[in-house]
Length: 204
Image 1 (cartoon, rainbow, N blue to C red):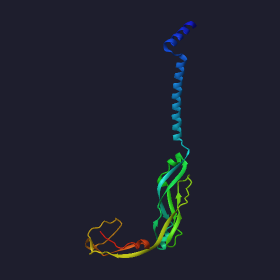
Image 2: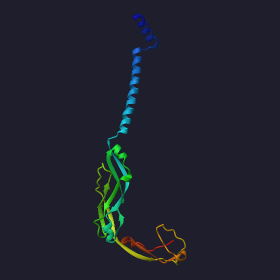
Image 3: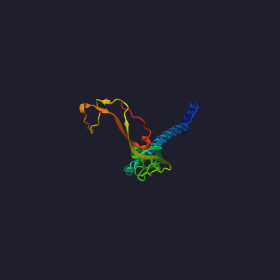
């Protein structure tokens, strides 16, 4: 019986130039490669779904709001320019935590409550972020220019513009005899620095 098996083995080697052992080894290697590939995919999917690695994400062009302007308004002051009015905010946290943060969840502001006189003020930008994130700090400051509010009346250089139709917001009320009005002048209220640049007012 054993001799017969040896004869079959020798015949196989002669006809196929191979070996049963080699053939089995190749099949085993192929199976191992497939299993390894599938395992790598499963591990990758796990980390994608459970991503706790620390990452950074930048939220562009967050507008800078003015807070604490009541005392400034009480003193007849107004802001007329800023060196920049948006910032980019970088948050650091896990991938899953960052996924839940929307741009609208972040706000930036400067505090105007100490501004009492016209002039230029270098103010630090402060940022509010969702709980669980450390608010980033900024070394740069915004230059805010403040001036007194003033009122100036401009005569309209035209022969009584007649307005025969009006488009008003629903909360506005205007009584017009014969549904028309003659406009001879316009009053503008603005920071003094801005008002000084206005030479003429035109109505259309």
